[in-house]
Image (cartoon, rainbow, N blue to C red; front, side):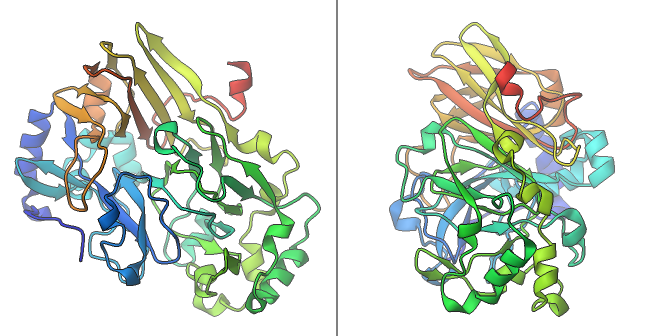
Length: 416
């Protein structure tokens, strides 16, 4: 079974419905849930998907362990359905792809600077939810990804309490490599790939994951995400290479190590080791260089807006994220310098003219009222957010590159 997408308006006909949707929503677009399975992972079962639907794509595709937000990026899965990873907008019972809306409206939707530089919405975010740890892997740098016609993928993590009622099996993430590790050490792990556990984790360090905190992970840096449900703003790419051969007794095929490397290099161990950004992996101050705690960006009567993802990757502001919390009865005017993708994680209320309601359980293919795309024009104009429920209203929103004139640096939380 494929994801239920009905009444789809094609790219050639999207102009009219997009115009009506933006007018009705005053610059906001309602988005529907985008579910992504991974054949090599075990779903963590906390992203509100109905238990009967964890394997809605079929057992051969694996369980659904991800929900993608405001995405115009394809999921790089074998056997994928045609729209896998792509977000859809919903208006008057009809659906159209967010990427088609961006292609049609351009600067009006994402801003002139981003449109002229990238010609697309170049980022996305997701809930990443697994029962246990996943293999120690990295995402290629932009330079290395370009070798196979792809883009690199820096990413970030935030662990929202609302989606982490339990720890699952291993709430620790191995990151980087221990200082003093050599390239030859990693090469030996690759040589031992077919002998069971290749020992790559013996060269790394695990960090205990803390709800309400996060990490910024540059490309080329090894990491083996643990079992907290993670909100992950990141670059719009799905490249990776898995350097661990065995996880919880499950064999990781060599193909998942080299899937985004040139075919003629698939057995070149020195080349594979060379895709790691060495100084960032063996950084003796790894936590200080990459760990994030929330920083208050703005606040008012009954509400607070916090930075949860900030900092720069190789000197560039590629993505950021904030968490807005409103107490019952509170309201605020949300004003940002650029577009964002919004997901509601607690409570109910309203953003502009669109209702917000956090779902308890979602059937595969069902629409919800928790996800919104905030256009560039609407963000700059300002949007009223209202909590009309009995508990806090909490929303996470992420932004694309160079949205802000300045953002906090990694480590700034110590002085906040």
